[in-house]
Image 1 (cartoon, rainbow, N blue to C red):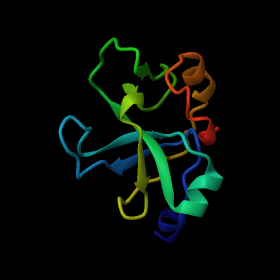
Image 2: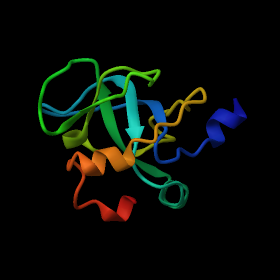
Image 3: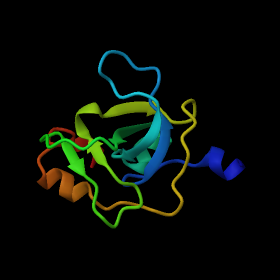
Image 4: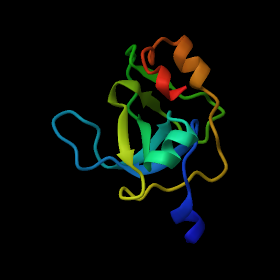
Length: 118
């Protein structure tokens, strides 16, 4: 339990986090998300920049389909990137899976302009 509370996410981790409260067309409820901010940023601010993951598949340029080898299935919603207080939102750390897709997302041209996260 203490280990879970002291967990600080790293870039590439797929975590479970509560995206509520939300407004309008923002993603809702507790769901998986891809951490895109660096560990140092997360540790210093106690916030993490997270893209939610949805199981609803759509062919849009702001979505990235997770690779088949990922334990979590679905699409990363790059357009719904959020900076979240991961302690207050009760982030649940991943089992042991870390996703190395950041270079693919940059190549996919969806996260240009967020150099501070790299």
